[in-house]
Image (cartoon, rainbow, N blue to C red; front, side, top):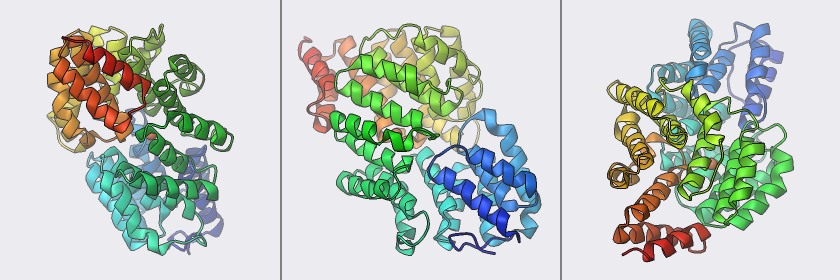
Length: 439
Ligand SMILES: [Fe+2]
């Protein structure tokens, strides 16, 4: 039995294999809802190992402790079926087990090995790509896709998704012109491909082209937005473009109508909510009582410490809401995680703890303390994953802290660094003016 990309499948039932292919395609395009689709397959075919491994991968890469009981269930079900599975499927099962055990590097490499053995296993490539994203491996976001590209062409279903991933990898590796061309090629093949749209968006963000970014997302939204699982994040990017164009009101309106449209029900949405309000907060905008909703939702995860990147964003909300007790509780959880083992222990130790301490210090008005904790992270913050655009919040915070501290040389250095990237940004110009007015 073979799937639609000619990968070997052990489960001897054609309609089940085709239905699982359709569920994969929903994930490839980040369209709703691959979990519903795979659950329907499993309901009819509980002995389909690859379906359980897929479900586990979906849940694992949501980086949300709330999904852990279901993740465990899927990993256990997949492992029970492993003796009947083929090598490719056992590779997927090994990957989700490694992720569940907290070793994201091993999980990502396991998916990566599957992807090299079966270069048209788009699912293995995508899960490895997501692993590289959470591990902040910029070069592997590009090169892991590069390894299999020669084995793809327009005749293979899903070719555009490979181009979209390659575009994002090129962007994170700083190859903006190639990234934009490749991303637009993927969008042309499939305008619903939110990851390809995202790659082009990132290029415009990194190159400081906010008006083009606003237009690009507005123009393409009818294609990707209606059933996208990823829409909140693209709207977050749109809000960043508005901020960079000096329109904070438009950014706040997007927070209310689009970024929070899902009620901040999952960690990925909360991250974007925090990351936008924090930028507005740094610039001195009144965000009303919006922090309170985020604080409430983050509080349900305050002891989770399942991913340091999430914790840093939770800290922003607790600082924004001036909740000292939640800040202390979160910091205790992140410090506990830092003393453990696995990928998140490393991330918490290296980045999570100092980042949380730095944001908390900023909230207390201890700007020197915030700079002491955050400055060393600029060189290594990729270790807790996310994109350059997301981690740019460290540069934002350092710049504002230096200005509030009244340290002109530091402030001018931080602003100068930003203006190399975005010389026309009104946000950067305002910082430059304030920095040069310091004594
Ligand atoms: Fe992004």
